[in-house]
Image (cartoon, rainbow, N blue to C red; front, side, top):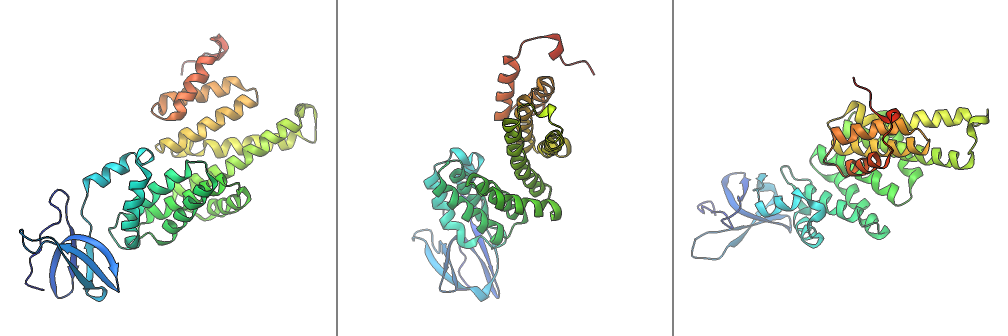
Length: 299
């Protein structure tokens, strides 16, 4: 076997390269694990179909997974990619989730993201399980963090707010990962915003109630601080900053603080024009009367 010089399979994409102890590297397409051996399809001779070689696990040193252009294209806009195709690739790659250099987790996250957006509790539960698997098993720290963030979002979608809040509060206290911290604060912000809305609904004359007013002020400032955290401290995280700004605009509008809401809407449109939240902010700005009180003063 050591005399075989394998060539890539197929020609269009970069091959996988399997490095072995005491034997030459093999180039081909990694097919998966079976009976404690790695199966690799290689071309032994150009005039013959690919042959599958089984490499015992104890011989493996490293796998360098080749770039496949068709797969990378699917990841550029995963929410628009066919779920069936994403699932097929994920199932093919899942056994390599914990293997260094594997991009399996990217496809797991893509599948989970599509499932999350269906709004179907069964599919969101599947997304939660997938996020959990990536959080626990992916070799890549960045994707571990994304799995953790996805877990929080999925729990919120499933109505498990108390569980999500408890986890988010712990993450806010202990995490040093900015992305995880942003997501944790957003979970807490959503819960706080719901409490704020409930207070306004149950106490329409809260300004005149000396017992309710302190709780209103506490919720107001706490919620706004949490929603604006990514915008103020991690402004380069466009999606998260725009999401928080949008919810803050909603909160300020609900509170009747239209000038403040307009200020944030202008910032959202200027700083994050390509986000979906910017479209809603433009509609909000266009819906307001053009009065001098709503003009932004020059800086």
